[in-house]
Amino acid sequence: MEILRDRRAIQLTDAELEAAYREKELQYRMQDAKQHLLEAVYQTVEEKYGRGFEVSLDPEWEEDILQTLVDDFEQEFDCNVSENQVWANVMEQFMRKNDAKGGVSPWK
Image 1 (spheres, rainbow, N blue to C red):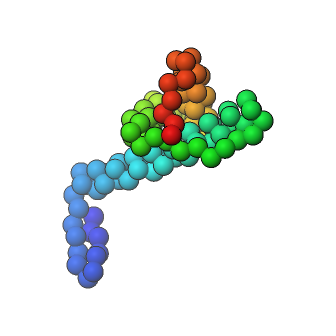
Image 2 (cartoon, rainbow, N blue to C red):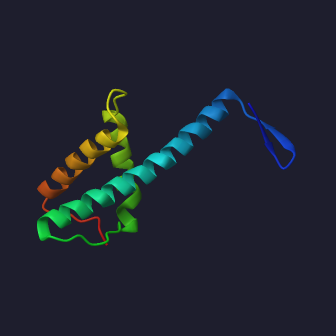
Image 3 (tube, helix red, strand yellow):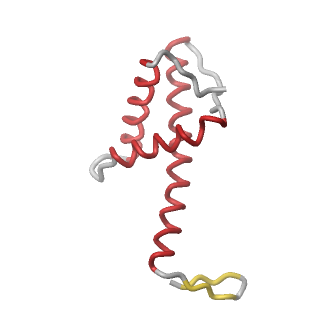
């Protein structure tokens, strides 16, 4: 594949193109994981206390948690189920597991 940048042609092999695609896909999945996780936490707090609050992840934990969620998502992924439903299932399992551990908190 050839990509044009600033009037220059850059040639990518199939392997390079695949690697670039997978890297970008991972970035998108990490963004999805963060958004779904923050929504799940907000909803849980809202259900428990009657109101939600803005949540942010502790940067020290963020990459590990998100990578775990992405791994879980990819393991659970099924073409016959919507991505949002898969994320909902992954978040439910994560929240249940985290709650069972006595509230070890990755939150700021």
